[in-house]
Amino acid sequence: MSNIEQYSIIYKNNFAKLSQFARFYVRDDQAAEDIASESMIKLWETMETEIVEKPLALLLTITKHKS
Image (cartoon, rainbow, N blue to C red; front, side):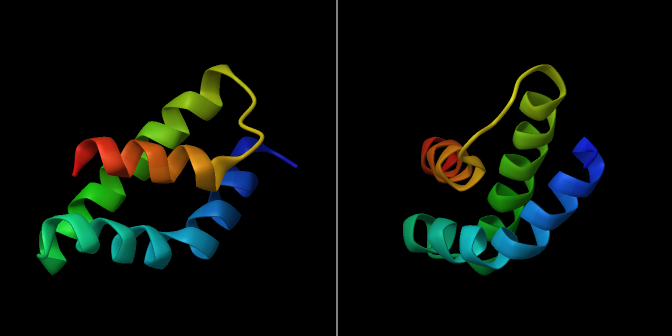
């Protein structure tokens, strides 16, 4: 499976959860979606250079630091 396919699956399965997680910290829907989007971009950049075994854990860590 290519990185694009893996990323697509990760995105579909986790973006809503990630937005909700960010919303807990920022209490603003639009800001939470922006943070989730930025976190997904960071995941993509990481996937280009290394294998990410636990993408949700990485996404939650990135999101928490951006919030």
